[in-house]
Image (tube, rainbow, N blue to C red; front, side, top):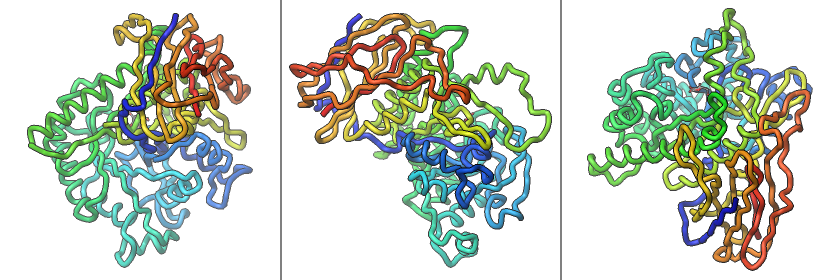
Length: 498
Ligand code: AHR
């Protein structure tokens, strides 16, 4: 098969937003403990953070990091995790049925973020707590000095305020699994009051109200409408969460998961704009897609991996990703880029060990999962403005998502560089793509990288950490303003042009 793509530098969607390349660290399983933090590890720094993991996070190119949950945050008392470590309490984390030692808290995590060069995005507990603890956390985190809580932060060794800009008003409050989950009406009122109070302290805060935990939630749509009817004037973003997996061997549908993400974004934007119109508001609510990934959730739910005992940092949700998973992750990231007009921020969930691009072994190495590669390469190459390609490609019918083009693409254009990102969702055939780049003025291929494998279920593991790596795509050529490239079946490709 063949596909023809035209890139027009006038077809600008929006600037590339660096926050699109965000990620997520939750106190869950081994994400924090023996993930980013392991004081006994040979590479640990004076704070106990693994520097081999820091290096990989930097290479991943993740920007804003959401913290500390997730479901965890709905049972969390932030005061437990500050001050002298030996005095911090051990608590039960009901969300993940584990013990939380609180050895890593806000101040340590903020120091870790300076090592990785990332921005902190903080979630407050609106499941089992309310407005006052959220305001206290805001004072502790952001007030310069001269108040009890800011002086406490200073006494705890953090003289400068953390100056956190983005705040999540709870987590997945529509989900029955969430400690303290609520109706949309109850949550909308609580979120509005919390947001209004937080903005009294600092009107420039960027506040994220909880949207739906997924597009298949029974309340999806109504939830967004009701929550925003209460909170529209006080918040800045509404969250989306989406996880995808292959169901019952239906690889075709799985590869087309980006169609659902696109539908999800469309629907949330339509709903938010509808509420805005009703309120005669000139303000727009954008999306914080603050959890997205491939997650073999069905298998976890069906397995009997119940943690009978209360353990600290057990191995939980340690999905090992395949080539096909990496192609889907690459495609989902392309979709987020394409929607940069209304998706202000996104977080790959999560960062280390727990459904993550980076894995670690206690006392041992850290390595890149297959999904690491499309994320890291896109974060490195996407710059300037996102442009909408015109794509003429064959389609195939998928059971879950209907007709899907076998080729998807997005491009970014900067002053003297451009980048094109492509997926071939065909299960068996190479597709030759011809890409008209005349409008970009590009004259040469700087790099062309493809992730593919004859075994689409190949994985990277502790025993074989480099089994799947991206390779130079030697078929990419540019002549007479036409870029030609062969895209293997089930593949993800990035091409940088100069
Ligand atoms: O990322 C794992 C979990 O998925 C998060 O804790 C929760 O918010 C979502 O359901």
